[in-house]
Length: 337
Ligand code: DAH
Image (cartoon, rainbow, N blue to C red; front, side, top):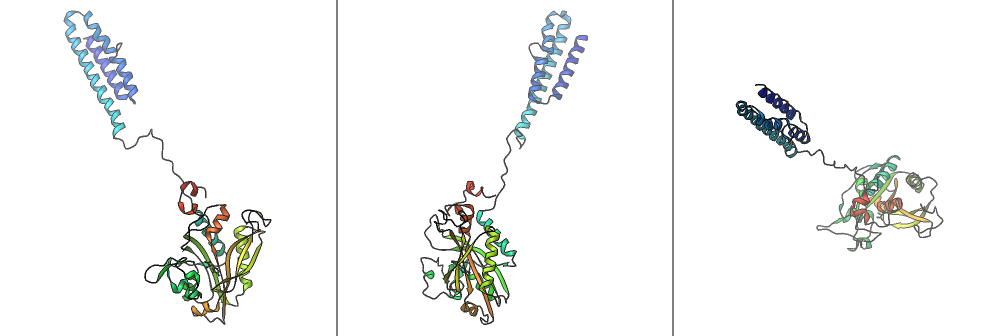
């Protein structure tokens, strides 16, 4: 009987160990300890031949039964571990997926910064449609019917007398038409021109126009606001120069240059050794435009300006090829945090 108690003691101890095992390795250790070549159950089985003949059968049967119980318990315990591996949707041993932080496109950053600067000077922001008609894009802006900008080579024409706007200036007409002075607005947006794609030009680009219409507005107001903008955007100590120019919708018209951001006016490759960088067009709104939007051009005057966002972004970030802005190569975009 004591032999049977001994076997039962080993069996209970082994079953408890199997239940408590927390890894396949711990199960293997239990297997070796009880069923291995020098295991406790193996020892009992080996000792059977030395027992008195009358006990051999009973002890042998009990020992074999204990061995079978343990083998079954080990098999189902091993399955439990394998089950965890196969059924769980998570493999905790895999390295995690790195979460990358997104960043704003350099064009978005430049537009936001321009808007922020003018917003601080009391301008509101307005937007217009990318698909325009001839009236808003050209006629109301005082473009004569034979103006070269209307040429198929420059303008993407659509069916039904529509076109893709070639500048954001038509938003000026839409805003003035539906508001009464004083109107003080900037109009960021996409523009389209049928140009050959190169390092310097692309068929889609962005502009920001701005304008103020009220009684008694002069060129002095225009200069004041542009100097304030340029110093805010590009930094203090910057020099500006207003050069006479021509736009159909402003009279007089000017182009604004700033002293070169790199060489500060001494002359370098960026400014083509001129010391100046052209950054925007501007002028006093032409009386014809005032009449087109139903304003009394004797009573109201206004200024307007327009700038190309890509050019500013290229200068600001020293990018040498405009196409990089539209390829959406993540290695490029990621640099603008
Ligand atoms: N629309 C002009 C262009 O695309 C830029 C421009 C010049 C806008 C003078 C204006 C302005 O509002 O007053 O080249």
